[in-house]
Amino acid sequence: MSTKRIIAICLLVVLVCLVFFPIRYFLVEPSKIDRQNNKVVPVQFNITAQAKDIQAKLDVADMHADSLLWKRDLLERSDIGHVDLPRLIEGHYALQVFSSVTKSPAGQNYESNSAEGLDTQTLTSMLYLQPIRTWGSKLERSLWHAQKLHTFANESDGKLRIIRTPQDIERLLSDRRDGNPVVGGMLSVEGLHNLEGKIANLDVLYAAGFRMAGLTHFFDNEVAGSMHGVNKGGLTPFGRKVVGRMEALGMVVDVAHASHATVADVLAMATRPVVSSHGGVQAICKANRNLSDDEIRGIAKTGGVIGIGFWEGAICSTRPRDVARAIAYIRDLVGIDHVGLGSDFDGATTTAFDASQIAGVTQALLDTGLSVGDIQKVMGENVLRVLREGIVARTP
Image 1 (cartoon, helix red, strand yellow):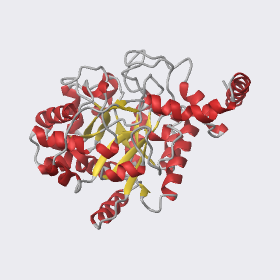
Image 2 (cartoon, one colour):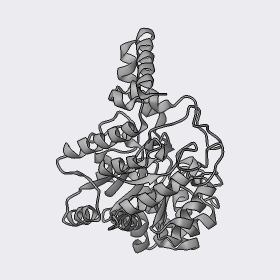
Image 3 (tube, helix red, strand yellow):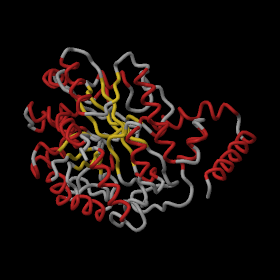
Image 4 (cartoon, rainbow, N blue to C red):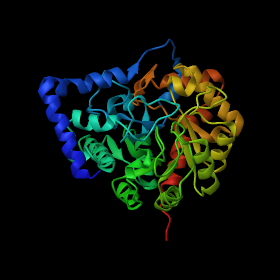
């Protein structure tokens, strides 16, 4: 179906909605949808003076939040969702990776989803009154997300910076050591179906500031099989070209949501660190999207990092102690250098805390027996190291 025809259909849908629903639905409902999807349901945990002191000196880095998906001003503190700049500063974050979600099948689940049928992100792009170019193009949705983050950075009085190069990270950390509570924002993609079948679009995304990409999301695509897809295959021939081009550009390859076959294919060809940006481990929480021991060993062998999530599907609870439990498991299996944070904040998830309360994880790691040095690695240093290595472009 042509882009013009898709846009025409979308416009017709909007006109029908305007006839049958009051205009206030379109103005108010986005915040309601956000609040309903991104919840904080607190659990009991206490933070000691020692944990608070450790937290105050941390450079927290998280590999996955979907905050750009929602119609929320990330420069203003909100009581909706999990992430905004004030809450990141309060949590002592140095870096938040912001993902671009461009397609979500209706009724998505962990087991099997078709790439066909209703795409809720098409409806969202209209409901949120995004630019019309985003209504029929997944690539344009990602470029819109990039534009949003750049606008937030430009209007933040220097408190939010876009991270594109290793030098950007070094400057960020240097300024933080000087007492400036600046936060870095890095762009990522959740599913390279937004390439729309054209490898040249990877360079378009890179030019827009994207420095990490998950190959798949909740369905199989032209690049690879998803753990939640119908066929769950491995890398396609096109996908192998995409991975090679990502490594050459300096875009970190993310295997979160990837099928077992895709993870195996990526690890077999990887020459740079691979990450699993957000998820868990099968040995702790037997959800199909979580990693096996062999996959954890494979990612560690590339020098990569596994980001542990904070929601039920990642750790089979939302308690900070179970985040720490999964982290300790990876430490014991492959070493402390290969595990970090991958919250999935604002990813239509329910958690026990938001970014401002991340010290709950620090406390849980302390209670688990991790040293201060190991806590520093888990809470940010490991992710920052891998990103510094992974976003260096190769010289021809």
